[in-house]
Image (cartoon, rainbow, N blue to C red; front, side, top):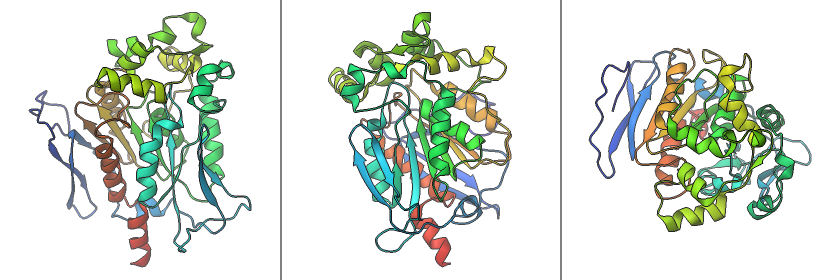
Length: 369
């Protein structure tokens, strides 16, 4: 485990399931510890106090729900929220609901969140996982015809999520994976969301770390200029390298069949050449002190967004007044929201959210205190 300034390159000795203390400094100077198995590195931001659970960290971003909304899952559409009357929402037992929005990444659909959606639903969150704009139908339908995705850029995607969030009567917790993680960062920078989690987030403008594996993973789009503004499918071999390189061949093939969809090449072009443009769609303000708390999660074996890229983003945020934390999991590929060990990742996120008061249980305790 490394902490604070990077004065040493020493790394922990690997163990099959290591336990690590994740610490955040409280206002009274007390250290709050959260232990999780499977995590190998932890970072804590240098500035900005951590509010006590259930208090300022989330309370300032919360507004009450009222009644009459139902929640369903529609195949090929995602976890949907229906609010015909436009009223606030309460659960059946009268408790205030707690919104959480999951944002998927490139070459994926909302189906990739099926495990996380169920996990956080069981813990009292009101979960939605909207598809990107122009992504219609299920995985099989998108593979047959995804021509509408041609030219879809990051601005349109982020604006769509901003529109959905602004229709809510409470700011949601935002969790994004890959390009969805970058979208979470951009939304937080716009003042949206009560807290954000970015899992192996695609790099915003200003991140200069560029490992070879990232170039190879993005090469199906970036190596062919004719695809920059078109639609880019992945072969099983390409998906395995970029998303599930630690899976067995059988599990990799099953994941490909269940989750992989064609993608717009526009977003890969925008991210890949962001540092050559003055104000690209991936630009954000790392020192924005008004944004909500952010957790960046890296994966050690990730080829698409290696842990070095995730950590470089954390370092960019490190001097910001707003709370920023970093957590890294050993032995995980890019698509670590499915497959063995995804529960450990979800549990670590839940612990972090509880530590800043952004869970239904902690919020209820704060309200009754």
